[in-house]
Length: 398
Image (cartoon, rainbow, N blue to C red; front, side):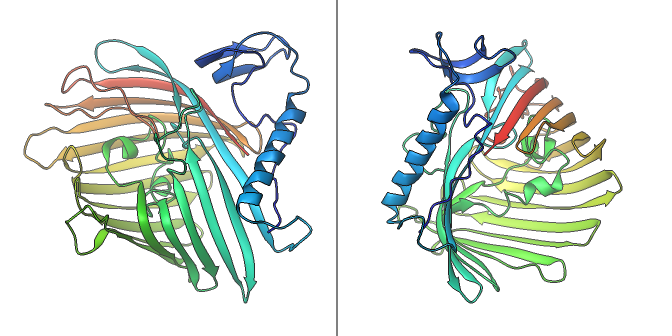
C-alpha cells in the first residue's frame, strides 16, 4: 500500500518546541531567533538556531510514515496508486481564565474546541465502488505532551471498515454517532469551548468500544447512523449489548432537522436524547436544540434546551451568541442556565483563532461548570456557585 504524506513544509507540525535541553509544560515562549513567533504548550528551553527545524521535522515525519507503512506491510510507493495512508492531526491550545466562585484562575488547556490528536487513516480501493478503510487516532495534551488516556495508544479511534455505495461499515472503537459531528451541528459554538452551553449542560457518551456502525448514504436529504456496541465480558448487564445509538437527519439548502437516541448498559448506564434544527438565512445561521438524559456517574437526570445564532461577518470571521437552560428532574431544583458569546477567525486554510466567554448560573446545589470538548472544567467553589470565564485559543490542523 503506497503511503501519502500530507505535509505542509512552511508550517510547523507541532506547537511549542524550541531546540535545547530541558522542557517546560504549560509555557509561553517568545522566539528570539524568529522574531514575532510566540509558542504555547510544552517546549524545550534554551538558545540555538532554528533554521533547520522544518527540514528535520519533515525528515522525522517521513521516517514515522515509513515505519508505520512497514508495520502495516505496505509495499513501495510505486505499487498501487488507488491506495493511500495519510498522517493527520489537530493541535488545539487555549488560555482560559475562569472564576468558579471564589476567585479567578488562569490555566492553559488542550482540546477545548476540538480535541488535540494525531492519527493515521487508510483506504484501499477494491473495485465496484468499494474500499477497505481504517482509522487509528490518539488524543494528547498539546499543553504538556501527555496522552489523553494513560495506557491507551489509540483512545479516540481504532477501527477498520468497508466503504461502499450502500453505506459505510465500521468495526472497533469509534466516535459515538451522537457526538461527532452530530452534536456540533446543533449549536452555533460547535459544541465546543467554554461557550457551548449545550456541551456544558447536557450529557452523552462520546466514544464506544467493540462497536459496529452503519453510516447510510444521503438519500433525498435523509441520512442515518446506527451503532451497536458489544457488551464487555465483565459486564453482566444488558442483553449482550453494551450500547445502542441511533441518529436521524434530514436537510435541504437552508434547513436541517435531526434527532439522536442512546442507551448504554452496565456501570454508569445512560439513556439520552438529543435533537433540534438549524436554519441558514444569508449570513445568519440559527440553532434550536433540546436534550434530556438519565443515568451516568454521578447520576444525571435532567432535561433542557439551547438556542444560539451565528453571524458570518465575512468568509473568515464569525460571531456567535447563545443561551442554554437545564432543569433538574430528580426533584432537587438543581437547575442551571448559561449565556455565551464567541468569535472565530480563520487565519489561514489550516489555522483558526477563537475567543469565547461563558456566564453560567447554578441554582440550589447544582454543580455545573464551564468546560470543553476534552477539558475538565474547574468545579464550582461551592454547590450553587456561579461560574464565569473567558478563553483565547488556536487550532492548527495538518
